[in-house]
Image (cartoon, rainbow, N blue to C red; front, side):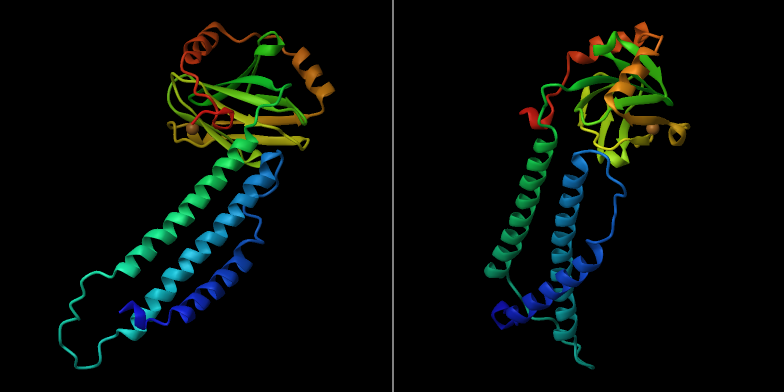
Length: 263
Ligand SMILES: [Cu+2]
């Protein structure tokens, strides 16, 4: 039966659909301003995914409307449909095509993430403490000073954020950095970001964590290294003991970031 399908025409219609949808969707700036070295890579990945999705959507629509038009029952036709028993070519096609698309998407995403998470030698480590409903930050390389509700990081330097959730699951998201990572009680999760644009941004919790979830935000300041050092020097408090203990406990279960060879 598939032999009678106008495959070339359907494929051409699918390509036209893909091009039209992509031409509309890809130029839209979905993610807004980028402010990290990951941003252009993530945005490009999104564009590729949009094209792939446009292809799949167009293919499905072309087949759907072809079937609606071609196999519509004639007025007064009350007979049963043709008894169809499998179609090897069709089944091979609908297995192979999605497999190729999904594998391509998976491998491409893996390589982008691996690239973003490639550890740099001079990276800065920041402990991120999340609890209902506030963020605070420790700087282990800077005498363990502690800041609440305000995160400062230097420009153009890779930062390893070590997440330590104190109660429930929270999620660390700075939209301009394009990186989001869950903070899970009992384990250290790591987000790796290299901020490349000076400015003030917002850290937003993106895991529904209770009544105050929508207010669980913090200010993020990306500044030149000299100003960052000055700000650090002005911090008087040290990471309080219960938070420091959570670092020790979490560290026993510290999954290796994907790009560093982990899975
Ligand atoms: Cu939350």
